[in-house]
Image 1 (cartoon, one colour):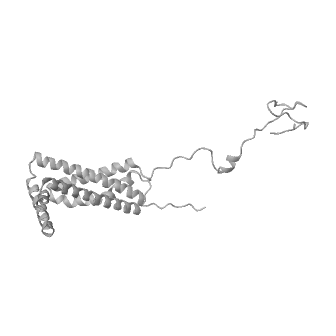
Image 2: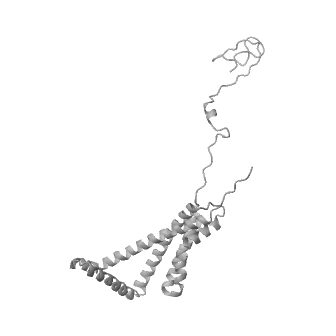
Length: 231
């Protein structure tokens, strides 16, 4: 704040009794308020004072999940058809193995400017694997219920499964004898159900692993190079 009059040079009044005019000559005065320059000196020179906009998400999850569910649904339908038409089985297996690659292609078509790299591909591949596990499990469960209680055509499957399981148990018991009570449990329906659930869990883990790796490789191949303009 200025302390002397710009016209007569007289001392100006400061404090709560300050006036916009010189008390000596009556000339109007211009008072400048002093600001704390601590924050302005430490802030970047190109800052506008407003917070920066939020960074865009790495993956558009809504579009990625839709693409993954579409591919997983097609793979589940082909798997159901393959149980009745063996000719379709190779196409079903190929769709399941390449599901993450197909999902990445659909995702890039719907979001042509979205970020593409190995990290994005791995995330989309994991979502694709989860979608495959859910769709295939639900489809096979529904097909099994219809075949067992509607068509009553699961008898041959049960006999074959029981024979294969007994054969493996007999080989294991021949190498490592077990008590009769334990052997009786191995032949029980509960043990067969547990073995089937274990097989499904292992298949799901392998499917998630390959789907994630396939998505990462697909994203790596689709990585866009950022070209820096030359000044």
